[in-house]
Image 1: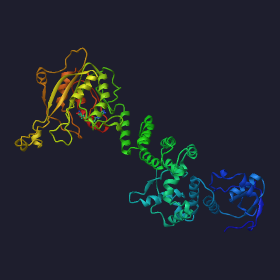
Image 2 (image 1 turned 60 degrees about the horizontal axis):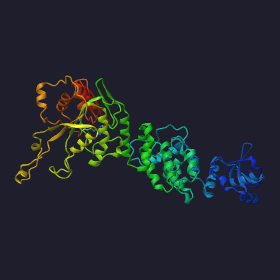
Image 3 (image 1 turned 90 degrees about the vertical axis):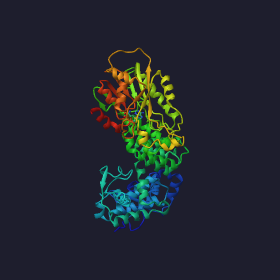
Image 4 (image 1 turned 120 degrees about the vertical axis):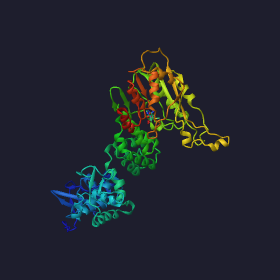
Length: 568
Ligand SMILES: C[S@@+](CC[C@H](N)C(=O)[O-])C[C@H]1O[C@@H](n2cnc3c(N)ncnc32)[C@H](O)[C@@H]1O
């Protein structure tokens, strides 16, 4: 169909009448043209460029560098004029890019897309079903390959592809599967025509090359400035990061680490993408910190998810509020909602070291030493909010040495608590033994008569400490609501109270335990605080006894349980 206009004869045209091939894809052409090249090119009149007529002038199909040389010299250029279709123009641009000078991978990606588009038009009916967009065809082929993992035909755009296809709606899109054979053939042919050295398959193109088109100009400039090792592969790794802030941070990080390997960039890019949604959900002021954390420690994405949950929970100001009860779903490390000396009584049962959670989940304690070090600021914060003569009731069950059998103990830890409280001005005021589950040991086969006959009897640990600490200060007077009988029974140092049923593996206070402490150590109207509120037993009993209650709980999932306890 192509018609020779100059009968293959060479004609001389003014280079200013000629415009570049619209599909031409080499963005770094200027760098390859120097004085020597220009001098040599204009001497060689036997090598014409190929042009097609366009409007008043001509459009260059092939021979860009020579055309530029003639233009620079201002002399007429030998040309062959041919009638060429757009598709033929693309083919010339393709030859130009792939068979000649070095070119940028982004240029290559753009050209491949264009060529795909033209070739796919040879099957117009089938192609139209994919919105005449080569990306949609590639995405559908990709989805089909993984179709056993996807239940519906709806799938989201591949990374980096979303913005590059003009006018395509964002989010999930529906395309027919399976992709017609004719379209698959065309796609495969286009990729097979890439020269051997540059050959990639369509999936690699979709996953690794397309994101390059999405790099913002300023990032691209920095990447091109060679400050980041690894050229195209480093670029690919950085370009893959979908979140623009995260991408910029990774780029900065790579620049600061001149010896960084592409593998490390890839690993970080992959974590950043996996937690993209989490990063979006994270409180704005924390986002960069989280990204830095990923870049430095490259943690498992699950850890980041937990961290974001924690940050979000700590952002929630107070989700259950009623006149007398407030609960803050955040770590009690920061109780800035409470004024100095505002609390009359603290009742709490802190989790053991491997269960306590801190604002920064990565600082979770593993050993008793770490645990008490991390608890230090929490006790300090409690001492701050406690009023003079205020009490802190600590429930602490000595943990059983792991793997040592029930009768071996690593250490008795309670003295560490006593030291810690003393450090922050809280003195040990009363020692109570809470005896729980009197028959539990035998019923659960925890102790056996067999051991007795071996003179090796086991003793079941069925009691816990209840330590009352006091902040120095003058005593207050009033009616706590305690009766004479209650006072008589509860001032005995051993309290027999049946343990409550645990909830979600949490050791829950029995109501009576809390009631005794509240009536012994506070007045109606006082503020009672539980910094590790759990299911909210302290709060609900305090409310029933006419006290105001404040709780801190890091696990927001306990909210419905607490809510129910408060209304029952
Ligand atoms: C032993 S349970 C308390 C049970 C509670 N006494 C009750 O009656 O339900 C300890 C609670 O502390 C919470 N927790 C752990 N670390 C925390 C922190 N840093 N700040 C606030 N709560 C925390 C846990 O999620 C758990 O619910």
